[in-house]
Image 1 (cartoon, rainbow, N blue to C red):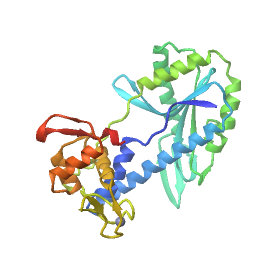
Image 2 (image 1 turned 180 degrees about the vertical axis):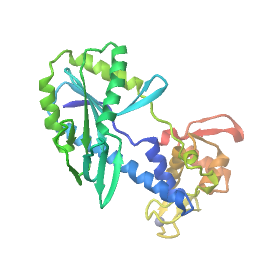
Image 3 (image 1 turned 180 degrees about the horizontal axis):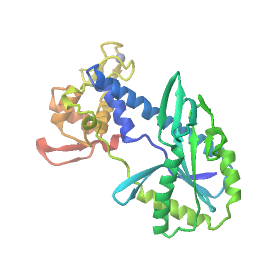
Image 4 (image 1 turned 90 degrees about the vertical axis):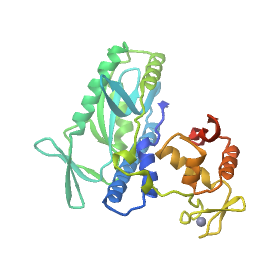
Length: 317
Ligand SMILES: [Zn+2]
């Protein structure tokens, strides 16, 4: 079993794109671009999730793994989709979630041919090599210079056709368990599992989550974000506050806690903290007393006094 040190999570970008694609009001080109971006991010995430499954099937013992590890190198950052550490080597895995036919052309561009459309991507083997070089420098700073680093590219889409047999480090995801096992037998054991786990935890400490601001990225004013609480039952209606409860005018469902999802949207998109006034606007509630009651019931920690009181939404995550 490979021990997981850093678990795969949805990125801030993916979470924000999901909220914006639900709450952006206009149906313009910007909306199309956001939807497209959301679909691509989600596909990428699903591809990386597949890795969890195949790594579980890999019979490596005394090994660790870290998902979506983002590290600093001087004044910039680099990200490794998946890092597998054994007592013999470090495997830097780049995941490509592409469907259709993929191959290298003579100029060494990576080409995807899907539904009659041709698209070129930067050489993924070169990409993962660059990440490996940066990791090598960092590991040497940490005193782990002797551990060999082996880069590889994994194609995770089940509708991919790999048209290349020259590069043994470009593989289909189904081949990963076998490939890792064979490779790891080729390398010599040079350290202990204790050391490997220590290194994995050190790298986890150095991991820096990427901060995102999708509204700024797409230049969307907050006023164009739809406010209100959605029905969690039919997903269609906007619930309204009636006799101390949320009621959906479409499906007539009653839901005590429907506002929690809306507050979570606010947390993902706008800010960790919210005031009573901001909550009244976002939840479309007139009464400050109602908001106060909802916050008390959700046991949100707060700071400040009076109308400046800020409630912490992080506990809802
Ligand atoms: Zn409903």
